[in-house]
Amino acid sequence: MVVSGPAVLLVLLILLQMQQLPLTMAATDCPLDLTGSNFTLAASICSNKEDRGKCCRYINAFIAVSIARYANATSNLGVSSDLSEICLSSISETLELYGVARNATAFCGVGTKIPVNYECEGRTTVTQMLQSPKFVDVTENCKVPLTVERSCKK
Image (cartoon, rainbow, N blue to C red):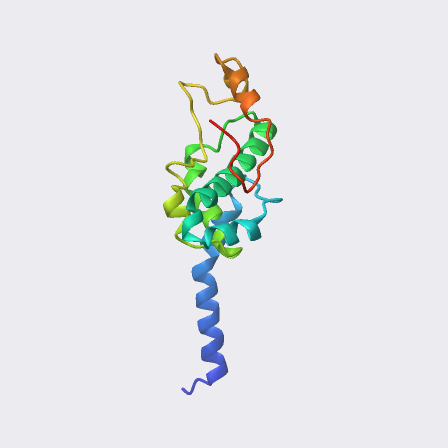
């Protein structure tokens, strides 16, 4: 049996696509929405090794905004633990797709320092967090826009 070149190429392409399909399908299972994030600016900042702090702040802000949107829609402070790895993979892929260096997610600590699921002293919902002591202090410190310059204090 003789197999032609285009047929072999087609089979290879199908096999490659099948390898990528589970990852793509898993990424769509993440409920976090990164739309509106300025990935171009993040890619530019993250490309400069001297701006790692700024790079991480931008990535952290993108994730925080997406989690805030999710919290507004569901009242949960973050995704469930079973979706955590899926979302972290999805976020990393999205950042890479838009030109953010692959190692940025590692040195910024996406998943460790920058989590996608939150629990604070047993509180896992927005309502529980609003009832926590000193929450007013947090809301006062978070009323500033995100800029390239570091002007926000903890």
